[in-house]
Amino acid sequence: MNLYGDWLYDRRDFEEAAMAFDLACSYPKAMQAYEKAHAWRPLFNLALEHDLGEEKIKELGYKVAGKGDKLYSSCILVSDSFV
Image (cartoon, rainbow, N blue to C red; front, side, top):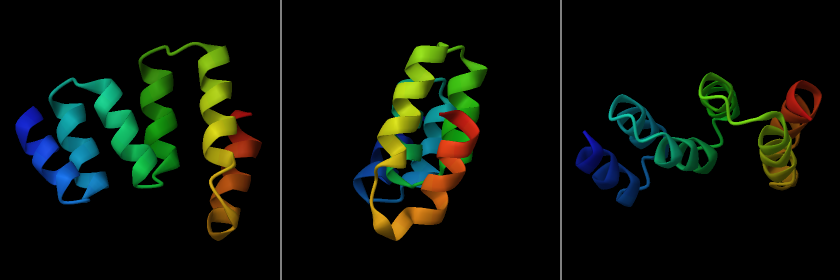
């Protein structure tokens, strides 16, 4: 499943790649792919599920909240929920 996730990631199908990595228990890769897919909710669910730690989750929140103006409404959701 990990190789399939790599293949999907290379094809820029980030959300599908993240799900494949999650099934393969490759959580750092899954989180990276969810971040690339701008799928904030599954990204933070995975971080919370695997006890990333409060400080790391805040760092992640600040990182994705600053992703740009096009994602403004998503950034507000992240800021309100996790930062």
